[in-house]
Length: 294
Image 1 (spheres, rainbow, N blue to C red):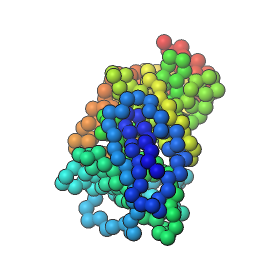
Image 2: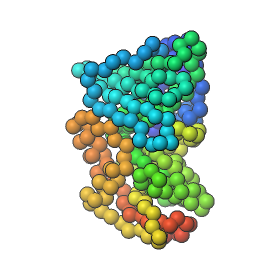
Image 3: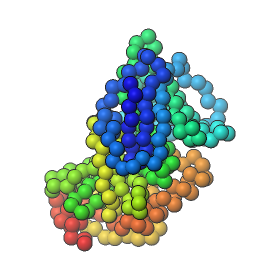
Image 4: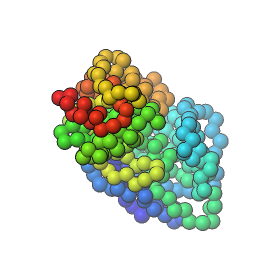
């Protein structure tokens, strides 16, 4: 199977080097549609590996902190030729022990070697399965001067707005409220943010638990939401606004250069788009307050 998936302005040309790997798109199946012109393309090639190798040096590492997710950990290393290597360890996955990913940015080639639990059986996977897709997207977004953020996003007529917060604060609730008021929900939890032709856009991306459609919308306002006994909105500016937005970004900052670039992108985003502190109950009154801002 050869297919192409689109993540914002990035195209991924997916293929398998092994006859035992069969692609069964689920979370990725709606991302074959191109929403904006492609500015970067990668060949994403899958193969099998007997076992995960030992790693001598790790530049960056992390593991899931969400108790609702299947537990995993990952380790990132850079080599002298500019490639990134990511080892993904899946602790309770029924099909895989993990995967090794090599991202070559000179050749625009991504090699994914999967380590199955049963090598004698065919392996049916979604090419953008979680958490592999999440790790790939963070890195690919940085290459586009874009970033991922914990936020829900809606388009309400001419208004495109994102509602950013840590988990459990009300991103999905806010999206449902706007959906009940006729707005289009771009995504209810995580967004790809990218500036195209001097306009910032939000893009949906493959989610873990459901088949998210490929959607996009312009961004005109940023709301940093919190639970409150009253519905209230107040604009905030300056470094306080920028750092509050940045704290909700998904950040794998493994080098000084990457940290500087990411900070510049978030600062530009918050300078271009108004940022608001937003307390909500929640009820539909918050939509009327936000609609009355202009």
